[in-house]
Length: 141
Image 1 (cartoon, one colour):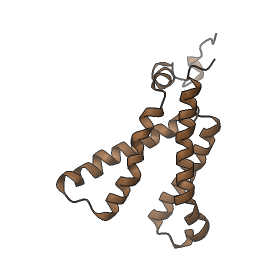
Image 2 (tube, rainbow, N blue to C red):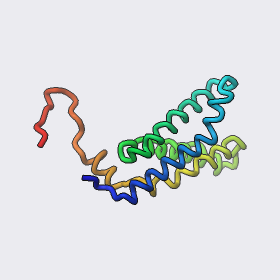
Image 3 (cartoon, rainbow, N blue to C red):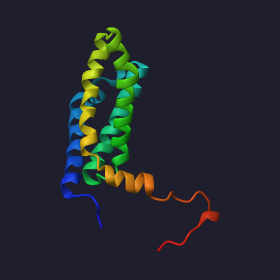
Image 4 (tube, helix red, strand yellow):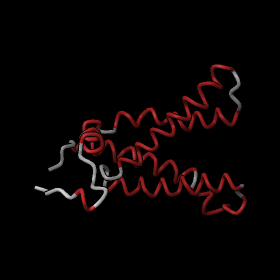
């Protein structure tokens, strides 16, 4: 029995699709055409974004099972906004590269609206953890 509405599942799918389309337009051309010219950091970042886009594509089919990938997106972007962007904005030291990243990262404001927080609480906070050892074995009903 699914405890998340079809509307919420489709909102999750829309978010995954937004990520897949966005990264397909921005990152994938560089992967296909000119990955040889990247610096080490550019290569690491772009390869992580490729993996992220593929996992989001999987989220189109399994939106709840891939929920942790959207949570990761929400957490790292929120951390970047608070730890990097906000101090630069407040100090008036925002450079062009950081401003560009700020624009890209601001799409994270949509993520909290599509996450089924009740499902998250039931399955990630209140649900008993999986066993750590065979001595912890309990009967499943």
